[in-house]
Length: 132
Image (tube, helix red, strand yellow):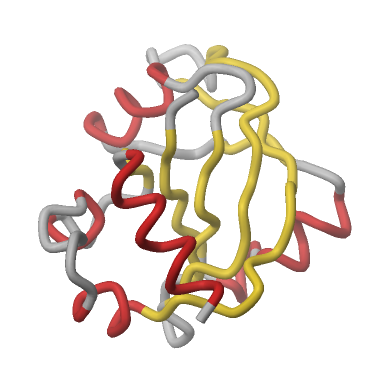
């Protein structure tokens, strides 16, 4: 199993929307690096659901339910994402930046990327921060 981080503006499509819908097609990604990460996802992988914009916090864990399929006819892809569970407490961007073990986290190095990998060690740190 691999780990990922998916960013979304809560005003556009937030964690509550994902839970309400029971899942969604993670489509519309038009960045080559982010699309490469979507292609690498496997069913059963886990992803931090991160609210960008004003919230700037990881708020839940999503499950990749289906691998990449075509999103339009220009070579872009999408995956199926379903909610797993909310984090016990949100993990803010500040907490991530301040945490030991996250200094090389892809999301912190490439802050504009909407889809990024998370190492198992980074996942463990974020889960620890979520528990408090």
